[in-house]
Picture (tube, rainbow, N blue to C red):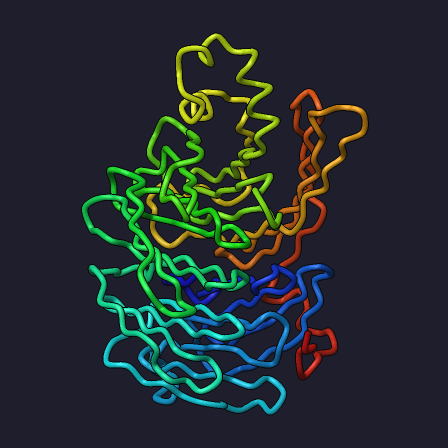
Length: 376
């Protein structure tokens, strides 16, 4: 995720495909951190960067500069090898690159009016998708799914998404999720579910991709707010948790687990007369909030955060209504990494703890650096 930034801030930040590592780009260069222990694994001073994307824990990065130096044009994608410290391949485009996604087989490059799908190994173009104007480079990608699902905005006037198989590639379906244009979207780990939020930011919806049907609706709040980031828990099947951050400064956690929802709906008067997807949105028991996780953005200017759900521990014990411990990673626009532990009891009461916090820009400046990443 990239953002316009002042010199003291992070320009871009992203987690790798299994949320074990993350990158940050600044006006001076980029850094790679191990999210599990906060260790600085690699850094390079090459000027400003708009995009730094990792391929799991390998030595391959996809980087795009800010254009402050001629060699780092925002129209040039560099496949960078951290082991050799040099470019493996450069790809040049006619307009600025707004987003890049990687899987072990595919490279996706998002421009304002088109998206390119490449074979990663040969960098051969497999598809060129013409899109509606996509000035924010909005996309969702499921690199861990067999089909490498890709979602792109279908409209500039309403919240619709086109879902493709990047593995072939081909168009699968169109999902009409919101009345207002899309602001954020993300796939679950295996690509079965797509979560979306509109520019209004009051509702978050989850769709089953194969049927293009809505499975859950959650109300984030009553007043409009910009959704910065969405993230599913890493469960292989139906994710337990969906997390969102917004310009209100809050972190929102929603439960998708069917047994939890069924139990709560059985105890509400609404459940007998209102469909389950609607009671999901109305039932506050589905929704847990941590306030002041990121700086509230009243003017909605340059603030953002990058979000990942690292793990969810499910404790069944003797109850059919399990307790959960959720670990959430956040990288903020002003250069801080935060790890939160959120506990939810069987009675659906929640508590949270800030486990770790450190400054990404200078906290590790005196530490020994590792010159290459581990290959997983």
